[in-house]
Amino acid sequence: MQTAATSPLSSWMPWSDRAGRLVPLKLVILLALCAPAAWMVLEWRMGWLSPKPIGDLVKESGDWSIRMLVVSLAVTPLRYVLRWNKLVLVRRMVGLAALYYTLIHLALWCFDLHLDWMRIFTELFLRTFLTVGLAGTIIMVVLGVTSNDWSIARLGAQRWNWLHAWVYLGAAASLLHYFMEVRLDATEASLLSGFFILLMTFRWVRKRATPGFWNLSLMALICGIATALAEAAYYKISTGVNVMRVLNANLDFSYTIRPAWWVFGVGVIVAALAAVRARFGPATGRKALSPSRR
Ligand code: HEM
Image (cartoon, rainbow, N blue to C red):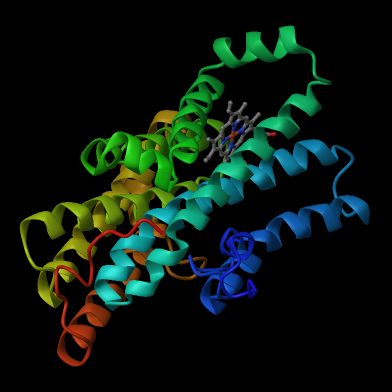
């Protein structure tokens, strides 16, 4: 008799492992990833949105897609720093969630234009920020379609890894799309771009040295400064505001804490965690942290 634990069907469930056993971590992350969609449905059903509800949902789904994309990029570095190998179990799930929210974002935008395909295609190719968003979406779709064991076996690990490194290009295009769309307040776009820079830098450091407290803290400082500069550059280009005025705003804590500080702070926390785990955590054998397919 086939038990639930070995049933092939249960092993396909997003909250199960290959043997079909429930993995609490996967279930918790799955629920967290579904929560924004549930909230958007609730907002829409309860009439809590503005007189242009679809426009609101286009924005909200866009926000969640980029947040999840950045979180998906953070999974491998966190797995390494925390020496928490189980995190690999949720990497694919988070990446796919980013793709699903992007597709919802795109579909809602099409509905907002009353499925007028002529107008949709014209806008997609004539408005630069939409063309950039389209590029990001195409990359994410290709990665989503090939994020399965069958594709890894067909392509071979090397080509598959090369293809999936395109996620960084997809994320860069998506962030650019975000910046180009923002009109006044680029706080979240700057924050997410700062985390993106932090994650890219971590990847670079990890390839060249063993990440420890001091090199990760230095990385946090450099990424914080890069975030401040990126934010100042954005305001200079979009509104002509003096670069020094925006940079000085980073030193004024009476109103808000600017993205550069958050990026620096998160970077230092990661550095401290890495140091603690290196001292008290399990050994980091190459095998223990080797890429896993699921
Ligand atoms: C063909 C693909 C895409 C189309 C047609 C599209 C369309 C749009 C439109 C029309 C807006 C402006 C909404 C408004 O101001 O009312 C927008 C904003 C946004 N999009 Fe996209 N988008 C695409 C791809 C993406 C991708 C791939 C991402 C991220 C993964 C993304 C993330 C965002 C974000 C974060 C915003 C800003 C939302 C806000 O202002 O709070 N979009 N997009």
